[in-house]
Image 1 (cartoon, one colour):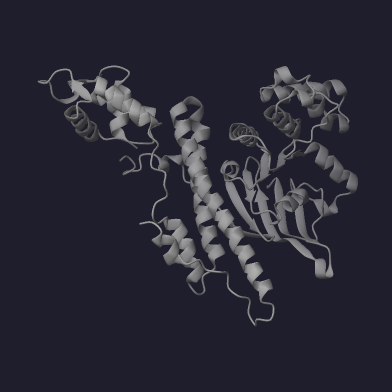
Image 2 (tube, rainbow over the protein chains, first blue to last red; image 1 turned 90 degrees about the horizontal axis):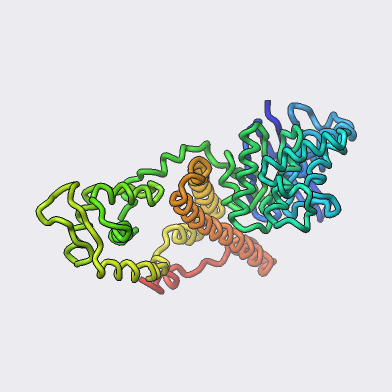
Length: 241
Length: 200
């Protein structure tokens, strides 16, 4: 079963002369362990797609299913629970709370979900350990580098048993080495069975995905074919001059 | 890729046999550039002719024949390392030509043509990235080669994105500039002759 499924999702903002068709009839299915990248120019509907997939906004038409459950049939509190337990978000500007340490930031979604402070902290510590941030756990966001802050944000997005990771330009303003590190972490999470959707205009980030969808004016205009192995790049005759 | 200077670089570490040079060349380029042994020997012969390397024993032939770099070879290598490669654009970039031509052919949607190339390039980048995720941690040379290829392909995609946006804006401007016209004016078409005649 797909971890995330969008069926004919349409989103219209405004009405009359000011109507904006942000998304038009989007179908998307992301299996556990798969990473899908969504590319497109600004205004193509990328971010809207992500907020609808994350149940932060409702589609005008169409259905969203997370882990097989129809969002339309869920109560507000059930959706909030789903967001706390199953969905991790990574934003361009990290969105860490400045008054909390790294480990407190990571543990926060678990505590909000009613898990005891001690257990939540232990889980937060483990998530930080996995991302090589053991010695940064007690630092505040302003004591961390940009790359470290984004790793903390990713730890927070995958802590506990989150199985859907939604990322909007996750490498933000990071340089290419840190951007690659971020994508490696998302890729590792997918190998553990997390389904991920990464919205980006950066082809180098998108190329980490199993499938790349191209969005334009709210439509999916194209997507990449299933991959040939990297072997096909090697031993190509005639490359050496 | 200059095989000639790559071999000089390998010999700058110390004397080596031809077969060894081939193995080290392939390892040093992340095995992305295969090299046949005939090419190694032809290149070594030319380097020897030019006085940049010397063979240890003139009577020995085949894989046992060892080579070392001369002082002239060391100078040539230092000069080559600091000489900028020719990065001036080719007289006719094929992809640029295709996009320019697409603008003129009736019934062809230039944005669709751009997307075909964009998708192909992203697929190629996905393949290069797979290589990185599997092996790059263990092989610095390969990681550098793969990065170079990814940045090159990325720059072509950026050009396509920019062309896409520029054409869209030009079409919108043309449509608003002539509101009374029965049909929106087509996007302005650059003069291909002027652009390509600039250099040849």
